[in-house]
Image (cartoon, rainbow, N blue to C red; front, side, top):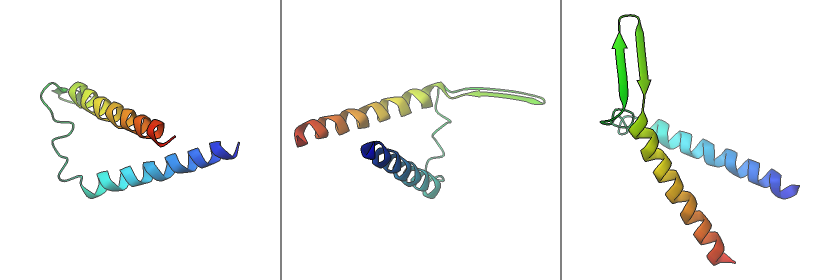
Length: 77
């Protein structure tokens, strides 16, 4: 049970760090969410935005990070 608490705290700290990085570099990440392939429909009084390519890019990056973390954890044993 103690390990679960440490995991939750670690994930919270990681989330805060990622949030701070995004907040600090938001002006440099303006292209994120405006990639070719992201769907944006604007009509008077209505806007629909679906960032398809941005979600694929973020998913690929997170998958690569998780793979590397798993590989490092296996090597550390």
